[in-house]
Structures are given as structure tokens and as C-alpha cells.
Length: 155
Image 1 (tube, rainbow, N blue to C red):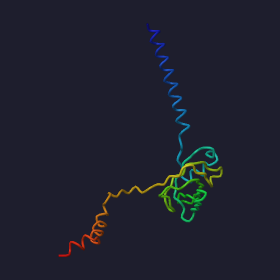
Image 2 (image 1 turned 30 degrees about the vertical axis):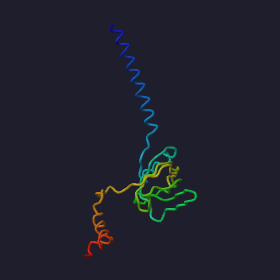
Image 3 (image 1 turned 180 degrees about the horizontal axis):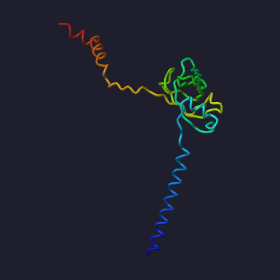
């Protein structure tokens, strides 16, 4: 009786180990690491064949947009002197602009000076404004200018 339960336990352990090893293998192949421009340049030679994410600020004056070709080129910086030139195919996100924080996912060159983007994400403000918090003034102003005001003031 004991040998039958031992065989079941060994079988369950083997199956569990196989499932865990498959899950870890799949997870490690889908992980995308995040770097600053400084870190990405320092490790560029070993990262050049991997899909990575690099975050930084879009350098003012560096944006070149060719709408016909859907080609976007710009430079990101960590504001400490480390810059990476980015080439992105496709339309930029609506909030993309110079001086804005971005995260670029793609492949970096061996020298770490440029990167081809597969995905471009814009960092937005973390400041939350309650909807309508400033719209009351606008509504009041519009009401004062409306035709209805003129009709109500007449006797």
C-alpha cells in the first residue's frame, strides 16, 4: 500500500517540476527589461540582440517627423548627458512632444548611441484634476454671453 502512494507522490512531483520549469522558461523569454539611457549605453554590447525598454526625456529640438513615411526620429536623454537617438516607424502617441517623458521599447545598437523602436509610450502627468473643477467658470461665462440672458433681462 505504501509503494502505491509513493509512486503517486513521485508522479505528482515530476509533473509539478515539469509545469514549473515550462512556466519559468516561457516567462523569461517574454521579460523586457527597463533601463535609463546611461544603463542602456553601458550594457549596449550585451543587450544589442534583446528587446529592451529605455526611458528618458525627449530632447527639445531633436524631433524629426515625416508624415508621408510615418517615420519619427528623436533623441532621448536622462538629463545627465547620456543621449540615445531613436528611430520609430508609425504614428507617435497623441501626447508625444518635446520635453516629454517617454519609454521606448526596441533594439539598441552595439555602441548604445541609437535604438530602433518597436513601441513608443508617453509618460503622462500623475496630477489628477477633478472633472469639471474649472468648467464651472466656463459654464458661467457662456451663460452670461448666451441669448437666454438677453431675453430674461428684457421686461
